[in-house]
Each structure stands twice: as structure tokens, then as C-alpha cells.
Image (cartoon, rainbow, N blue to C red):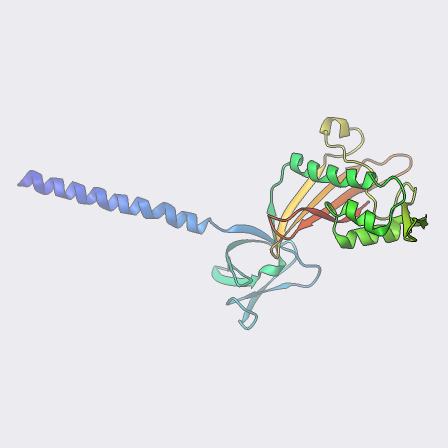
Length: 242
């Protein structure tokens, strides 16, 4: 009887320990399950509120590039801990960084440059848009035609033809490819930088490379901006800059 009683105590203790250890990791995961976000605003500050909505009391302020650990997002409001209390701020102004390999970024960039390089003669606006639309937004294509093309006559149907202006530094045109091989880029430029993030349900990608100063240029940096509306949509260039 004594042995049975001792055995029951041991079994009960083991069960208790099992329950304790089964719940402990789950609590730790919940505490660390948030996503890192950064405030992304052009000026001013972002209100921290006591509840998920603009009607709730403002309990603090966040500024551009402030970092926070978002625990959850619901109805456009991000929940996080602020000064030891559960607080909320608008998720529309938060940037969530993600990762993308240089190999994948190179494919997207090379495709865009190849399409632009294929514009080697005169085209109508419709033809230009048909060629570029797989990798560029309509807004970008319209600006590209406006700033980097000149009128070069008309086709047989009377449609205006456009041709790329031959200049070293066009306004929007992606002129050069990036130097992706770090060893080759060493003497001419810094390694290509890939910045990938999500904001307000949309995804953004910036591919950039800084070139070292030479006799002609200084502080030269090539930038190509991509975006897509969802993970199932195509990446398209919406801006480029030198």
C-alpha cells in the first residue's frame, strides 16, 4: 500500500511537471511572436492610442524610423506594448522589412533593363506600353515617354512615333545595368543593396548601387523602385533615379 501511494505521488508530480513545461514555451512564443515594424512618415509624429481607433485617447507619440514590436494587427490598427501597457497605432504608417535574395532581385532588375534596352527604334505610344507593361507601371511609362522620348514622325496610319532621346543621363531611363559581382564592383562601386518591405498591404523593393567618384561624376547612385499590390501580383518598376 505504501509503495502504491508513493507511486501515485510520483505519477502526479510528473503530470504536473508535464503541464507546466507544456504551457511555458507557448507563453514565450506569444511574447516573442510579434513582428518588427518601423514608423514610416514624412513629417510630424504618429499617435499612440489606448485602444484600436482614432477615438481612443492619445497616450504617446512615435516618430519616423521609430522601431516597435507589433503583436497583432486588426482593422488597420497595430497592437504593441508602449511604456508597459498594451497600446495601438495606425498600421498604415508602419513598414515591415522582409528579405529577398540578390539573385531574385537581379532577375527583376535585368528584365526591366532588357525591356527598356529593346526600345531601339521609333514606336507609337501603344507599342511602347505593350513592350514595357510586363515590368513597368502605366504611370512610369507615361512619365518615361514624356521626359525621355522625342517625336520622330508618324507611321502609315498617321499615329505619332516616339524614339528614346540619345543622352547620357535621361530623366527616367535606366541607362546601365548593376554590377552584381562584388569582386568586379570593388573598384567602381559599392555592392548592390536590396531593400524589401511591406506597407499598407503593398510590397516595395528598392535596388540601389552607389558608384565611387571619378573625374566626371561624384555621389552617383542608381536606384530602381519596384512595387506590387500583393504576393501574387507581378513586380513592376514605378520609379528610377540617379
